Length: 164
Image (cartoon, rainbow, N blue to C red):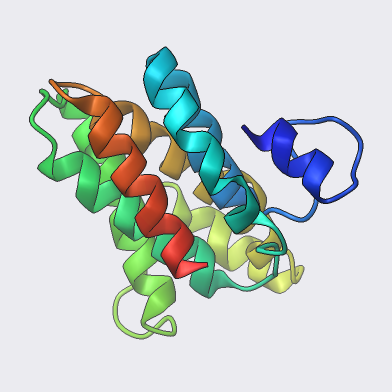
């Protein structure tokens, strides 16, 4: 689907068009990969909504992660203990960033990379392009478990697009 977005944006054929926010692109790729053939077809009309969503800042990245994680934790499939721990750390980091970094710093790996990369002024691009993309993709994988996942995943993708 993101290949279609790349063509709509007149970019080279790719599933990572520069006009799409990296976290939104990660969610879209994971949703596409976990939908069946009919589910994938149903995603195509959403392609124009991805155009011009790329922008820096913690806000959109953290909002997308928080939405994907809450969807994953509410999904009917089972969540392994290590997955739950990673998802809760992702949610804690996103909440911390959305609160303007007030309150106790997040746990998990963010407790060391966030302050270190802040000093180098690299924390936002690292979160947007690496950390948040991984958190969101894992949340989509967890949310894909259980019955009727095509419908659940398309709804999640629509909700993510509404945030953008």
